[in-house]
Length: 240
Length: 304
Image (cartoon, rainbow over all chains, first blue to last red; front, side, top):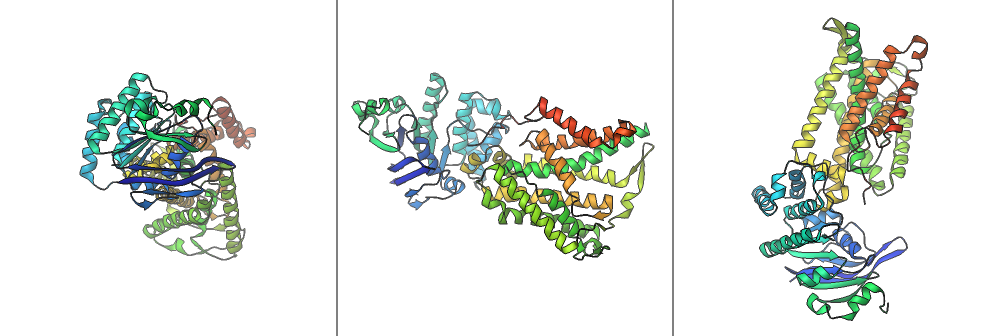
């Protein structure tokens, strides 16, 4: 079943066209990597879906309902949880407060309490420092906090922009391990943006390669390894 | 000793006024990066709301005659309503504009409101008597302190405590703090932008009404420009406190109040008339040493 569908999406920043007619779809429970070099439009794609950047044309539907041009809070309330690049913890709030902001729109008190427990079980370091302000956490801990915070929204789909940015390889492994485990436990759908395709190739799942605001390649990550065009896209020998 | 106590109370009550003003500006700045220069005119508007429109010198008191248990909530409501309306009618359209554009819009709104009051009430200050008993002194540790000062300080402390509790303990307070730090991120977590912003405007408007009541009781006059001075100092307090830091704005408000009173008490007679220059001089020095403000939040970076 298609959970998220993007159809012919175009986004412009002034005179710069950042996305040119991008179409993709994600089925329930799937993991989709969006990769590509700097400036390919990956973050713009996520921001447009999240409602932060208004598209010029195109259609976005979440679970069959159109969300094109809806405000971010409404899209979040429909189950699309966005973890933007640069982690964006609320630095002056405590860890627990950060998590509670994530649960703010929920009315099921028991569910929230259960999820809070679950997040603390998954990330013991967060439980340990729950009353510390989030700004004091290390980069890896902040990444875990924003993933935990996204979980607190009780999402159907989590979109993560460059989860490995600025983290040590060992921590990246840990982050991905947790993401995969959460996905299995909660039938989560994951939309992950990474600049490099190595993670996608390691993790598996489907992969999209973007360049210059377009999708240039799409397919199972395992098959893309062999594709010459993958290299070309990064090094600029392509025929665009 | 009693002289010192007098100074302490002067400083605290003046600082309270500035702190309440700074709070009203900092709350709105926090959620939408708007420095609302119409805040001073909100203060004046609330005071004039107690008078019947007329251009006579003698004020025709209207709502001002109500018993205080009715008058105070009514005026708070007027302040909140005015502030909320200004958001819906004016500032909402500038929400994604750059801060300079929003600031100019607030100047324009203030100007329009001032002239509206001018049209209804003329420019002549009107005398208005609210709670004359508050002018009587009370004796505290041998010093004779005007009752109004004590009331002002108590009201400010109660407001600060209530607001702190609201921000720290309630869901809406939590959302407001999150939104103040990173508005877009808060929205992506489901926090409703309109709700948070309207709430901030409502609180800010009530604070303006409270200041209006205190000023009118203290001076016994209603003057169209009566909010301007508090607004200016309150704005400076939010800058010195570190734009975006609510506790910083409050602390800086008290600091400026204290500096004002201390200069008043210690400057030689001939220099006393230039007290404000000394205060603003101190402000310049603070900003030269700490341009980011005394209590700048760690997260005071540009939002994306």
